[in-house]
Length: 503
Image (cartoon, rainbow, N blue to C red):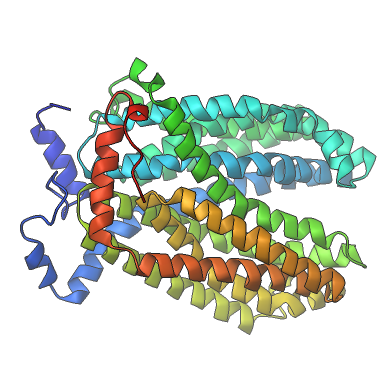
């Protein structure tokens, strides 16, 4: 870009990427010294870098998850129909769009991460604005899902009273929907610079606002379930304004230089990369929602859904840890590839997969030891407790697989493999896993065990194995060269005019 790297640029880069200080895309001087460091020293250095991202990411994700739980809890005190309405609106309607927009925002993990590693600091702000534009337009395209939420839920077989009230709630959650277009890119923009503590503190502020406004609108002002929805809207927009305020008003002086018309250039290429990221993530997100939907068609469906919901809630809480590793791995791999350090990206991958797997193994063993007690968190029903006990082995296996699979997906995001992974997800989940679950659960009459088992072993396990093979067989020095080409291409005013980086 012709700009002279300032001293404060260098100091910023030194503090965040102490092993990635040269802008060229080959092995940097001193790499041999790194190879001669003790393994324990290298692991400790990488662990500190990784957990600088993972720790705050776990906190912020748990807080965001808790805001939805708190809103549902307040709605639950209003009545069963109100609880069902806010649950369906939040889980089915918002959840459908959440996965897609979250995935589209993840395109910034590749671009911002690699640009930051290559010291193209100014481009991070341009990428952020391009992502805002693309996601904001997509929010308008997804609006019919909210407007026709009642009709959609009726088609899915929900009672009329629940569907109608869910439709009302969904319309009041439209502001929440548009907040995703700004919050997700802001999170990735800050994550790529390792400014994760800011995200954690802003998330805590959002949680406190959520508790206060839920109490005010539901109990004091008596707005009912609509008040619960408004509280969720306000809380998520607090996150948006908090993150933007930090980024735009002094927190990111090198990467945010104000709004620019350059953000409107290269939008088509940006849309394609964002769409690949969105499809990659939403295919996984929808997969488990389909699992719950299919369980509703079984005999004694109420008991099966209750037991599966308990298992999915436990899995959802624990999943916040591997999802934090997903974010951390994506940033670490992108930073190192952008700086031209293929070996460092490979080592970051090994450390992240190992540590996430150890944590996953711990929770897997814990579930097996407490197999007949874990459901007491949610219920005292003897039938549900027994049903959850029967599903505990599948829950343990799911948790173990989920400790590896998101980390490998993080490697894919950091490396820019989103399009390939989208195809892999489509094949594993919907060509193999879903049909196998239907056959085992409904045809062979194995019930929820057959559906879940088929989808886990036929879909998630195969996908994890394929991603592991791709990661192991990768030429990391070549990936670093590709990252260099990608950074140069996306730093130009019109990336559409350049040939696509060949993966």
